Length: 465
Image (cartoon, rainbow, N blue to C red; front, side, top):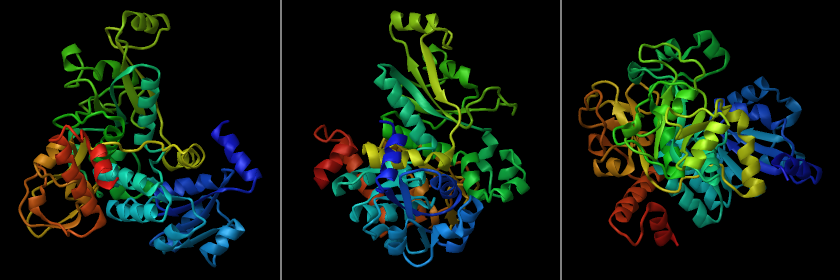
């Protein structure tokens, strides 16, 4: 039975999937636009730091006053309406809610929300991939220990890429590389919220019409989001990060098989089994036709003569040797597709992507010379961007994860273009996100040195039962 048919059945049985959502920004608002159209779900509550802004966004996408419950979550659960407030702890602990959607975009808050939801026996869909990038395996292990499910958000590129990797492997193909597209030129690394729209391809008026957050969109442009999402893909699929960061090779969809093969065979990869990002711009800034900027891809291998003959017979596009080809999803629709995660988690008990190991990390890279006393402002801001690195290298060199580079003070100078290290900053050592990350680093170091544990996932199982 299809997910949609199962949703319809839940609607007919008056047994909707009951959801709570934390954060009603752009991603959350896109889901709100679809939630009123999907049968078999009930959004019991929405919480946001600004309930009035959440209500405004709901009105923007078609919610009526009759669909809002102004009294309480309990009344909303009974009436089928939706309560809007600012108390996330009440939402997480409400007994009628089955799934929490974490949609704040704040990695420190997201970790705290996820852990509390697990303790309350709730499944979680984590839209805040920034948190997943630096401690996703820890969140997945905590969810498993609590007997609940933890999932990436369908509609975001990591979940879609994971789906393609799973498709290829399930069909019997060896995966050579996987990733997403992007609009990239090297000088975008220094972009700030003040310059983002000049490069993005929108006017300031269009950005204001869409209520777009300049800092969030700049995180895409300056390389932070591609690094974050590539780390999430790697940690979920068992692929690795390139040793020296993403290369952003320029190419369209049909160029992927030639690009995403080992250098020894004419491609850009240092070896098979990596994540990478394809740029939609040539090195001189010209648009490449039939690009994959807004989508995801998987490059796989026809490693026998028979498979390569099949590629040829069915006229698929391969690399020049006929050995490598790709499959792709050209577009991702962000929050408009999130309902698929809700249905998959509740009805199939299957996450749409989940971190299984700590293979890749995103380090904070200085955009300019930084001085002691300055505060870092996280991804998309004025001070740092994200650099994808192998997790082992990140831990060994003491690199500060981008997800924790928010509102923390520098105590040492950091030169432009170099990574910020733990020793360069003053970090509060009590937060949930910090403690979980340090637990992952400790277990990762132990697993790297112990054949008994083998990886971080098994180390968690050993420590947490």
